Length: 133
Image 1: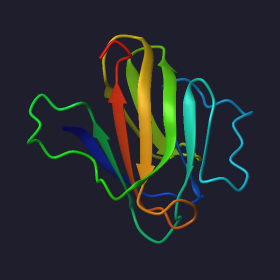
Image 2 (image 1 turned 180 degrees about the horizontal axis):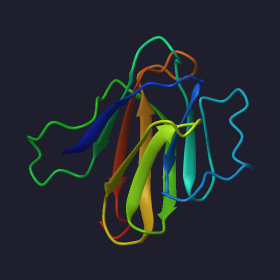
Image 3 (image 1 turned 180 degrees about the vertical axis):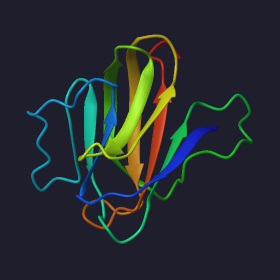
């Protein structure tokens, strides 16, 4: 079930998502489509051509509910520590930032999928669940 969505303009080819804390300087994307640490994921995206569509999903209560795009390719599947129970999505220059509460503070299972891994990514689906579910 989609719980949030945002379109973000980016000047640089990287979008960060994760905890509301600062992104660690050690999180380097290099040439990979995504990179992560214990609190954040950096995703390579297509800059300056169009808005990057980001959708946030939680497990559906009803299996008939529309979910993430099944044709998207996973670039991250792991856990993130969200110290205040909120997930933030924003550009690397910190000009645009979207924050959404997903639960209590703690570890969350997060899967990030994109329409085209690498420099042509223009849509991102984030699926988030608490570890107990």
